[in-house]
Amino acid sequence: MTSILTNNSATIALQTLRSINQQLDTTSNRVSTGQRISSAADGAAYWAIASTLKSDNGSLSALKDAISLDKNSVDAAAAGLGKVSEQLAKIKDSLVSAATTNTDRKKLQESIKVALDAIKNFADNTVMNGSNWLSVDSSKSGFTFDKDLVSAFSRKNDTVSVSTTELKTGSFVLYDANTANVTNVTVTTALNKITAAANMATSAGASVALNTGGTDTVSGFMDTKYVITRMGTGASTVTQSIADFDISALGASDADQSQIQAYIKIVDATYQQLLTGSSTIGSMSTLLKSQQEFTQQLMDINTSSIGSLVDANIEEESTKLKALQTQQQLGIQSLSIANASSQNVLSLFR
Figure (tube, one colour):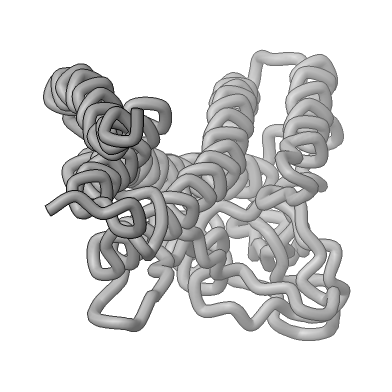
């Protein structure tokens, strides 16, 4: 039966065309955006997971930058320590030369002073990201010798956490402007090792101890005061830091020789402690580099995971797009045919 009020064929053709158009819009959106899930409406679960991974990737990127900044500070301190160690070796060489009687100690003292000035310059200018780990002032509010360097970001269940690795800068601090005795365990432990290695209470040497009385004594490796008790004829006590060492007025007496021997031992023990500090900071640099590489790997894995969740298969979608365009054309023709059937009724009235 043909009705001029209701055209069932046209209704069915219209419904089919409407469905095709909806699929065509979805497929066109996937082709243009490259994503099969671009909003929560496309798939709430996958969209939420992908959004979380994208957020974590942003945090990992920030972590990678933070690690880079910390590594720059570590590498700067390592470079400074390397230069300081070279100058300490030169000072020790000059002191060894001064241990002989037939030498010009005044000229050697000039060489020592140049090296000491260079060490001070290196220490004061080893600054990175506004911080200096070689020349410090531990009396400042909030100062700490133990630096927490960021190393990892992780998510467990719904909780995120940032991990840090501690670097004890007290194992290589050179100068401390603090006028009170430093109480940091790492610093005092290193200084006690120096005094233990330098102490030689015999006629060929001198006893060495930290000057724990008063202020401005226990500081960094270069400005810590040592009590040097000279042995032999003319025995006396001298309180000095490495930065104060002066051999220009020393002669050939047993006491003077024992003082030079004490200088040599203190400088050598300090050099050995700096090597230990350099080893520590070198290991930290290697660790941070490894963490950077691991962080980048995590970011790459997250990116791959996001792609597997929301990316569209372009080959499949482009093929589907072509098929839907053909179906759309057929649907339009079907609707046209269905609408034309009612026009045939007019011929009955001619």
